[in-house]
Image (cartoon, rainbow, N blue to C red; front, side, top):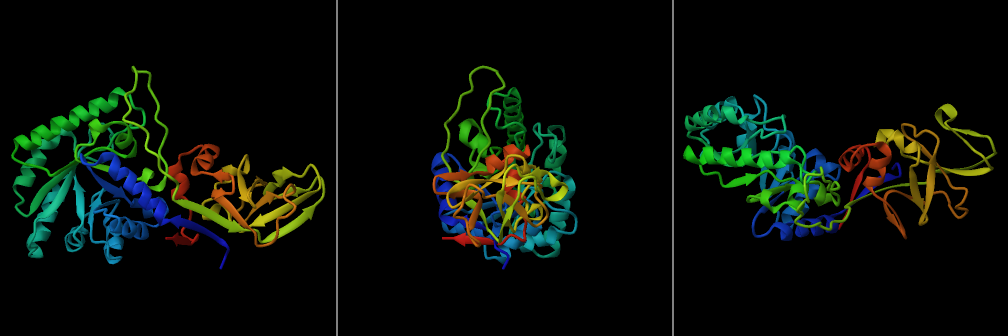
Length: 380
């Protein structure tokens, strides 16, 4: 097999989950966000490991992702954060998925499917509110009309209410307080109409760590499960009040091997476009990994890997399937040596944050971009 792979530490994943549980217990439950294939870690494997650890709520994007978990024998509750599209409602019921809803037609087609299938138990839904994100969700002015649609659907039960922060990491952003106020206002309206949602949730990883006011009785944590969170910043609106800083550890390591070594002379152009030219006689190592695997071409400037416990710089343009590194200062490097792209080796480590900073993005994108052709190996 092509020697490029990802190692996923299930013990590290479980430790992060336990840390999050302890952080919010007994106030709130943890809904583990495993959408986008668990941010590149493998949605099914991660969900099954978390379920054995006691997790009973899992958030995905779509019915397709939910069905993957069900077919993999995940028995816990599965929340569809982006709801469903017309024609998917029967699968939602048959697979016992819990959709986010925000349009009256969501309720209408779920009610019709429940009648058509003689569904014996209520169809549980979570109402998604747009409190300031400006993305998916019901606007508060439309709440009475939506609640009326719910009242006409005896087979559909409003189990939960959720929303999303737009600037959760900016801990003193006044927009956060405004979103909470709108969320509370909506909850008052919903309860006044006779509905009693069992779950209320708006907190993502950053909010769960920094502001217990946002917990209600459920938090949706994704990035922290996998060992990262974005830095908490201030907008300069007074002194931010932080609950604390949760310690988590990266779950994923990305590795490859040296498949060729070559000696080149001074002045040798390297890679496409000759973007790098050797200044001295050099020893180069070729790695079977490239941008088709998710290794950003922006790492050509400043990117590095770890070989035999030491850093080695990436040189030349990263190509689709191959990357070159300068191993001149590592005379012991041999064919087949293991190379760490993300992770630790000896005293050296490279995190998704390092790749994100060099690529002008965020750890979410770094992790999610690791391609499907890179096999995941689960360490337990």
